[in-house]
Amino acid sequence: MEKLQYISQGITIEDQEFNIRKALDNGIKWIQVRWKNAPENKFIKLCEISKKLCSDHQVICIINDHVQIAKDIDADGVHLGLKDSSIEIARDILGKDKIIGGTANTISDVLQRMNESCNYIGLGPFRFTSTKEQLSPILGFEGYETIIRELKSKSLELPKIFAIGGVVLEDIGFLRQIGIYGVAVSGQITNQPATIKQFKTILQ
Image (tube, rainbow, N blue to C red; front, side, top):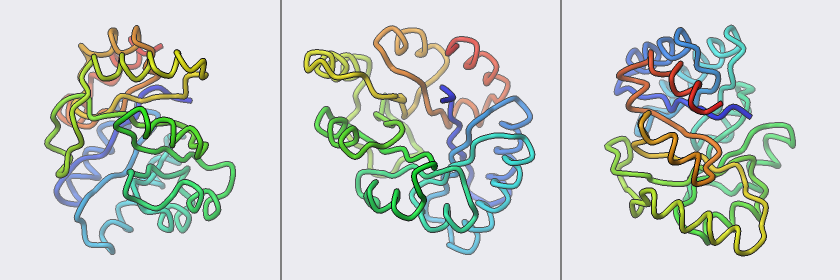
């Protein structure tokens, strides 16, 4: 599984498509299409555009929240928040081969996600991020360390945990030392798409 995921950003469909194209041009291999509060018809159109672009570049394309749209456009999967539809229902709709990621904020969330057998866990937020309106408590390095330590103390095999929420290039080394598998990045890649190469190098 790829260790770097770009979460799309932009207020308009044009912004979103432009930022996705920039990420693809700079070598991203996994995109999560996320456009909160968008009109449904425009979001569907963005998902269709993104899926085609990703297919052309042989890149993974998953959709944030919308399971049925992911099925309709044959996306590679979905990412579900804690208040979105259940992993089990999404699995029934999408089938066993699609990627399903789930958000977590606490150790109990992580254990729940592991029980639900999602493919990866987006654990966060790492730090404050303006891309999320209702932010869960900030974890920081200490929060990740505590959760990983608790998982190890239960002799559980570590799931594929992605740090999410305000992650920047300088954080990666320490996150990897802690035991984080990968990162999902929005802001820095949107603003500096050339950093994708650096992210990928450090995450190898």
